[in-house]
Picture 1 (cartoon, rainbow, N blue to C red):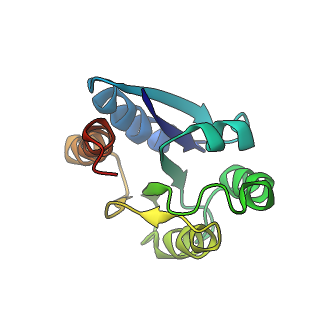
Picture 2 (picture 1 turned 90 degrees about the vertical axis):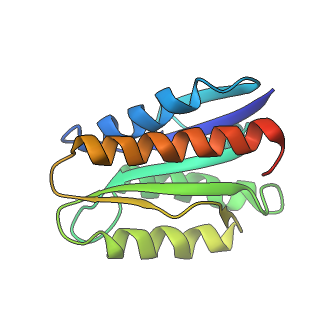
Length: 151
C-alpha cells in the first residue's frame, strides 16, 4: 500500500476546497492510502511514511501560508537524506498571481530534495468548477502513478 500525503493551509476555505477535491479523486485508486492533514498537524513521521506529497496553500502577501512554511521548517532537517526524490505537487489558491508562493515552495523543496512530479494547480481568484476539476485531476494522477509504480 502506497501513501499520498496532502498537507494544506487554509483560512478562507478556498485551498481546503481544492485539496479536498484532490484527496477525493485520489481516494478512488486501489492500493493508495490518502492522508489529508492540516499543516500544523503534519510532522516528520507523516512525511517519512508517504510515497508522494501534495503541498496546498493560499497565497499570503505573495508567499505561502505561514503554517505550511512551519511544516517545511519542522521537517526540513529531520528529513535530510531520507526523502530525496520524493514526488510532490503543489496547489495554490492565489489572490494575485501565486508566483511568489510557488517559487518559495520550489526553492525549499529543492533543498530536501523533492521531485516535482506534476505541474502546479494555480487558481487565481474564486474557486470554480474548472479549478476543482484541475485539483481533482492532480490528485487522481498522483494516486494512479503511485498505484502502478510510475513514481
